[in-house]
Length: 341
Image 1: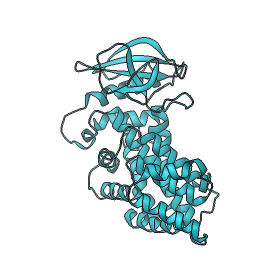
Image 2 (image 1 turned 120 degrees about the horizontal axis):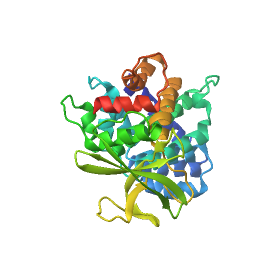
Image 3 (image 1 turned 120 degrees about the vertical axis):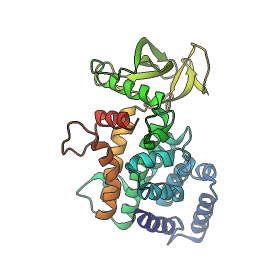
């Protein structure tokens, strides 16, 4: 069912992008843009439109380009969602995470976030406003916003785990990095809480990145002889771990390496620049997932809503003690990942 809705939405988006009612020159330009999107020339679309974007067609084209650049073109994400919903696995959300892993790249989170911003340039804040009446086109856009947010969550989990396939593995195997990540999340949320005994936590001196001037708590967590570093934002509980990608020096974000045995290097905030706010684990795993699923729910019919609601329900089902609250919390995410690991 969700596949059918997504295909219908894509057809509607194509009609918008071809510029119905536009002048010949505008229509020709929009057709050229659509062809670039069809051919996967996402950087070309961004270069062509971003500096001067001012129309609905521009914003939609840029949103599609950034989704594509993130590794999740609208056509490919149809396959990912549909195959996850039809997988027959115990957890459709775990299937979604595993099915997404091969499409994402180091810029996926940032690009998906930018795609959401361009979609919202068109639809505004209507997607989560229960009092809004959405047109067909606006419902389609809310669907894209929701999918982008849910996919951000999936990509984020791939950063905090060494092997996301473990989430769909019924064996007794576990992933050391995911174990360490859940321990770090729990420690940041409440350092006095009970931490998994498999984790040995060492508190290091705070680190300050020169370019941003931001200071983070720094901890090392060792699991089965493997040590993982985590940055923590906030001065008092509840705090949150920072999503990181690669290693860099405190002096510069410019050069990131995957692995180096040098104490001058630290894990590097994934979206950190001189002007942007860091991306926290809570922001992506909690806020983006709640808002993403709720946004999709507002945009589609009840039978499709039941499919996407299952993503959240998979996590809520792991909650102890069980309750009827449908909003996912940090502790829910931690419990879900621990159970799946």
